[in-house]
Image (cartoon, rainbow, N blue to C red):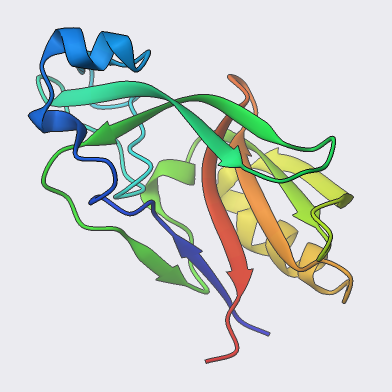
Amino acid sequence: MTYRITGLDPAAPPLFALSDAELAARNARRITATADRGFPCRISLDDAKAGEEVILLHHISHDVDTPFRSAYAIYVRAAVEAATYRDSLPPAFAGRMMAFRGFDGDAMLTAARLGPGDAGDEAIRDLFADPSVAYIHAQYATNGCFAARIERDEA
């Protein structure tokens, strides 16, 4: 069994072209990272570096018609490509406490694991060992925000 972790599409929406007022109208903010750690980009799945501009925005990460619909604040960086990791973990997971939530085909939570991001491979494989788990959402457990979607990768 293999899995794939993917970053968000950087093309939608083009936030960095918006003015600060336009961002504020969308409940988003342009900010500058104050450290090399603590501003994990959901596109590149790596942290922004100190001094780098990021957009903090409200993101619906689980847009489903179940009680498990979810949204929270996330960071994105400009001019980065969407990351893809196959059977490996992105840098942003390292050193962080992570929650891995397994959902079935009806978008209902079936199982979850909590642990260090460095141990995420084991948690992901354990969740996918259950055939009812169709996909997994990784979340940064401390702040509760969406980190990435994880899917079975049969390719």
